[in-house]
Length: 203
Ligand code: UDP
Ligand code: MG
Image (cartoon, rainbow, N blue to C red; front, side):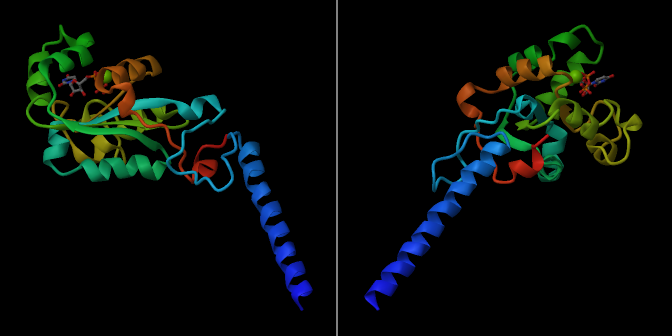
């Protein structure tokens, strides 16, 4: 009887370990470095090898969006799309930071009004990561002038005037890198593996 119990126990152990070995293999084939056995995916550092799934962009909910309680709905669109939030904070923007952020618009006639608008209350600023996230988020945000923005875009659904267009999105890879460095310190950006990334990220 004891011998039989030992045999069954040994068999269960063998199956358990061979089952565990399959898990890291499937991660490797998806382009990810294997985690140590027993390590959960969430909260671990990402070591993805597919280059452009690590593309990042800066999205900000402007003061009108915060005042109108649109932060949750805007974030939800990016989450639903499968992008990964790697940085998030709320702040009252300084004139200095804004001047750097909008340095290319310094000479525009609307610049003083833009600064006034952007400092009129807190903004929520985020870094989102994913495959072609810069281009995709520009499409999701919509035309600069909400009057011309398609329905279904953030600006097309939530605003109607260019001076109150609810949200900012970086317009190029270089712009995104510059803006992320401007708004976030390195330690404020978190690299983590989301448990659904083999479904949302694989190309
Ligand atoms: N803006 C404005 N009037 C204009 C054009 C732009 O008030 O005629 C503001 C608007 O808030 C816009 C921001 O300036 O989002 C930055 O302009 P940009 O051309 O970079 O547009 P975006 O990249 O935000 O679509
Ligand atoms: Mg712009």
